[in-house]
Image (cartoon, rainbow over all chains, first blue to last red; front, side, top):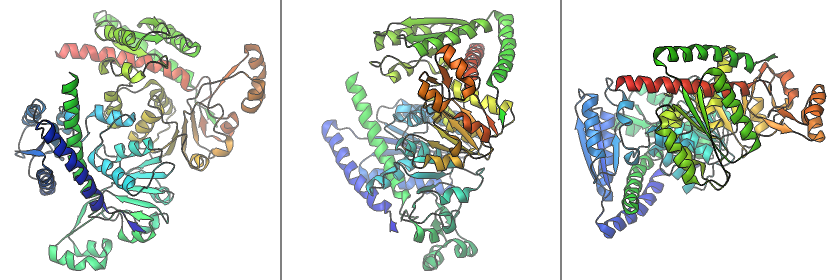
Length: 306
Length: 306
């Protein structure tokens, strides 16, 4: 079994992106602009948003964070989106999920201009993925494809199982793998005999959100395991059940560990696997930068064509 | 094994639709309007278009057929689409596929207003299906769901295999079955071990376009078989391979037979199956009428809300 090292892939992409960003600046002083809108103060969201802002700064992308209180209204969030829509210096808009419970997220996401929709959650953009004619993709499934491509793991002809059917990861992932000629089975909470289905899979993408949910018994020897889950373990009992003893010191020191949806014991059976952390995670935030640059480049070519 | 009789289901839906259409006329003299645009003179397309026009007339839907020559340009087709887009008496627009080879179908389909897109092929509408928040669906997969619902066959928890990944049938079908809690595997020409995958399926939707492609050996006893294929058999040899001897007289008399993608010998093993003709076909054209009425009703409520 070999580790699919997301950090290495992410760094390689960041170097390439850096060159593109330099070129944009050299050409006409163009700086890709990303606006992140965050409502409320969910600690996990805050951590994600910070890592996005930090990478944007490092890459030379102009990023702006708009923070709204937990008590904000849908109308206020929409106004913020509209302001970014009409700002020519903003090429990419991200609304951090989850939004406060009283706000219907579609009401917000549908208002982002498709051509500034860096997360690729607008129905038009997701439809284009289904129809196999999109060139941008939601960051997480896009990152998964980059890892597979980097390691020369061609999904064509593989039996792929995607566990989890969110529009953020599972559904676009399934469409993207199908477009790349995998035979894709999309599983979810109502799936009967998930174990049997997983055991037939050449490639598993786990996006379930349950720590160590997919165990060694569910995995075919030699399978490719891609773990999208990020789960926080802070109880001794969970550590004992889900984590390798070798990480106990770190667990005690930090008070918690982040683990994925796939149990570490499954790695020994796998042909290839992504660790958590250091697998898909670094790609997700890198693809956000990559999508920002792509949308920026498109906006220029649209302006030139006009 | 029991037959899923599409004609009966279609007639039932047509009766319900008739009542709705009467109500629209009674309310304010509103007549649902459908424009069908056909370029070229493909004989199969002509037959489909005729059956659509005939049913529209029977149902009291105002339908208009715009015929363009095989040599028409994309620009001419777009102009026809735009005229229908801006005509307030037209609630639904259908561009008959396939278009002449020199025309990129997306160039045309993307120009139909999403709110008049009766086939549900616009990326925005397909994205809404992926996101499980659409209320209209492409006619064929929608007809499949109506048959399942009519016969009380709930897809939830079933292992469903959709064979064929077109944006017309296979891909939206897969999304719709997943939204109804089936575990869906989407197969295609590059699928390895299709037989083994089909043999595990509780529900098969065949949309391959190859006569009698799915044979009895590939089917699990008791499975639900839904056949979307319509293939023309006009050679004696193909008749002998693909058709039941009992239909030989009809074959000789007509000179051809229409059969599906599932071999007739598989029916004996099935729990339920749709025949060809008389299965999904009658539903497809009925759902076109149903979508036309739905789009008409929506346009009224939009006008009222404005």
